[in-house]
Image (cartoon, rainbow, N blue to C red):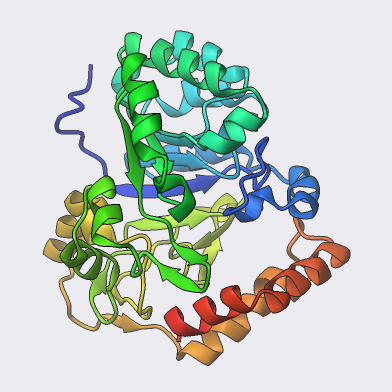
Length: 341
């Protein structure tokens, strides 16, 4: 058995199994109906990926995310294979039927964490809140390290006491994580009030120290990567530069990068200090890579994600709809240019 208090791994991969989700949360792109419909077409081949990972002679921490990862075909069988050598974790809304099978068949000692995203309003609207609670308690009783986390979307925080109490009565500690985006013309997480920060368990200093990473060293691309459903491997969710396709093997960079964003929602020095320290001890700050200027980054992001015909998970019609969605939302445009430039 592995000691989850001190797991040893060489790199961290975020696997977006697909961008399809069974929920339609209004603060998430997967909740846009016309996006979620067409993104069902592409799923990451987890079995092919497992062979490639095993051949690399490294031990990985693998976070299965999406969309909703438990919608991926044969997800339980894939996890059985992945956990023979590697560690896994999940970002999931915990409502698909395969969750129960997963809890019964997978060794909790190989699952570092299950971040069970509790999208309360959407779960209530779809009558799925009781299923979420049942699946959470099943995983908890089976010995999984599981956390109930709600997005700190500003209007939800107004009822935080109510929901925290409901979950406590079920034996579940509900916590809130920062929301990144715009609401009523304000940009978050910078615009949280002191009262809201208290609900999140954060301070203004935490927001500045954690998420304002511009110019700081980051190990994204060195021993951390995000893999899209078509196998394309990127530094992180914001740095839209590819370092290959995972089906051709894992090809990490040999240097660190300096964060090019005014606001970063995935600070690796905070979220995985173990891998960050490992990278610093191996290569340090020497010759760290600066990403291209912001205008180039944005143009490349739009080109690669929306216009590039080689991306097999966006249809031409959907690309047009995404452009319309972005350009028609003044708050989204303002957020993009304020924090990515």
